[in-house]
Length: 148
Image (cartoon, rainbow, N blue to C red):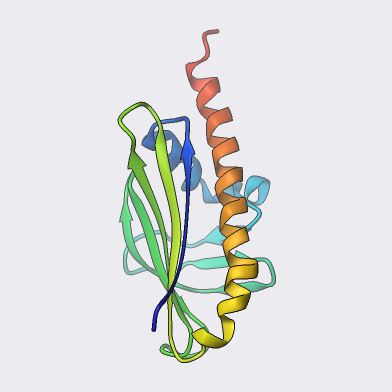
């Protein structure tokens, strides 16, 4: 049975500004407390390397839609034991702001054993990243629109 983690945050900037910061992977070590490093070619069908606190894995990129979605599928060990489909979605609120949705769907035989840990550690990690992204995007966007 799938297990879902779903978080969201409203960011006071348009989708393009959020996407620019979200996909500036070289800067992740400077601001991202959850995905501390992301390397590789971020394109559908490619494998990337993702460094989280205490863990590194190589998921397969499933979707890249500029200004809208980034999604990858990773697994521990062999597929079917503990698989996670990670998704970043950017929704235009039509008022100059963006809702950033950060979620993951877990499937596999071991998911029930890790459910409590996912709620205790992974969901707060998502929320910390969301907050840090919001702060970085809003600061970046403010510098773009401020008069000289």
